[in-house]
Length: 273
Image: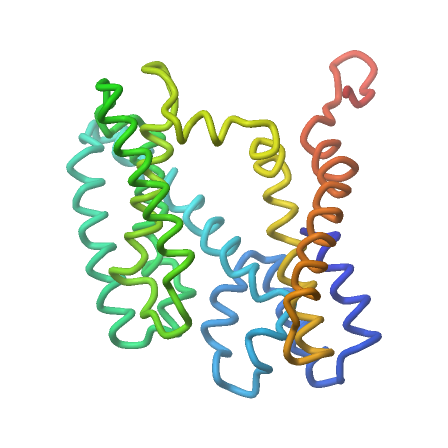
């Protein structure tokens, strides 16, 4: 993240106007503090460049995640301390989060897109899966059907949703439920489904490994291209995708992996591979 922010600031100093560079610098500080979602929600529509030309706009999702990762452990600690059951509490929270997301989207979808309380349901679904609160699907036929349905929901939302689709609200349930079905039914102790085997192929696994770096790099490349050229041709888009993959592979290999695996041993303090 820091490398991508530094690269954006360097390119922005070279290509952006002072007003646009000021916006970039402000969003960089917000991204480092993991509150860029609040920053963009607050600034949306007020003297901001168009969304397509904001190189760090995509860091809003990192802000939502980190804010959730602060609150969720405290919630679990409280439930453990008072010996409360997780399932009913999580069910109530998910229902409240869905209602909040729908109401917020109807009221102001642009702001609701960024805020943690209108995005909480998507993360709570993942939390429910992670804590094994959803019963396992043991039937192989059911697993095949549900994982295929999950893939269909994800593809449908990616293909059919447009900028006019009110989001998050009800619309967020489609890709989230689809993802949850894939995670829950595509593999595991009861055997992999066809979707699971597809996702276990080497190219797909490799893309999954570099996905964090790929997410960080792709949007700045497209944003700077939109800033420079306006409309981006299909050929240029394909080139930007290829460049994003190359940058992601490089940073995954030389930055992300060393940062993940570097540890100091107890004897000599040397980093271990």
